[in-house]
Length: 92
Image: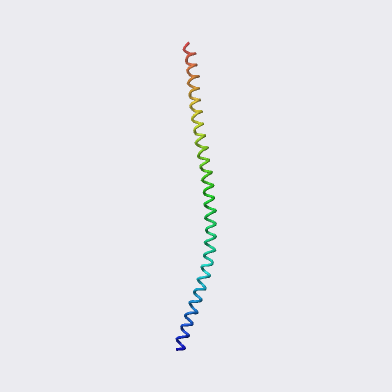
């Protein structure tokens, strides 16, 4: 009976040690999870900031492209107008 009791006590002690190790592991896992969460939040904020900047650049680029097309049309009209005056002067 004493031998069986000793074995049971050893098994309980082993389980107690295992539980203690698991608690320590969980403690470190929680700390790491908190750090990872902070990193992810910082990355998300950074991504949103870059997305807004990219959107602004796209808007500015579209505006520049529109202005370029307007200038090209104006230059074409000016060239045609000037060219027709030259042609009419040459034909006189």
